[in-house]
Image 1 (cartoon, rainbow, N blue to C red):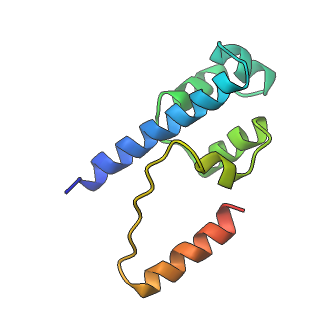
Image 2: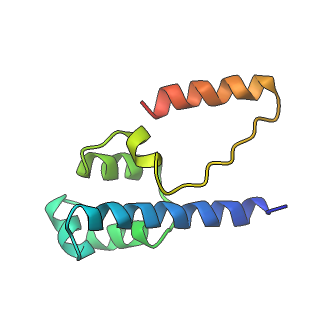
Length: 102
């Protein structure tokens, strides 16, 4: 079974890959130009693409720069394998998704 810290590292790398993929799909081969045009610090944006852990507000800024919702952002590039611990937790996942991903 995967250790929690290994799972976090893997998911943050996936997050960075998703951010980079979106930039490239938007037609920017250079991360610095994308960051400049979207008023994001170049060094901060580089950290995001490198899969460094980030705050939720950073993900919101990325979504805003790509004119997309959080659902659209998280709909590709992630291996969601969430299994609720109990039926109670299943309801919690629903509330979280409804609150943050809409």
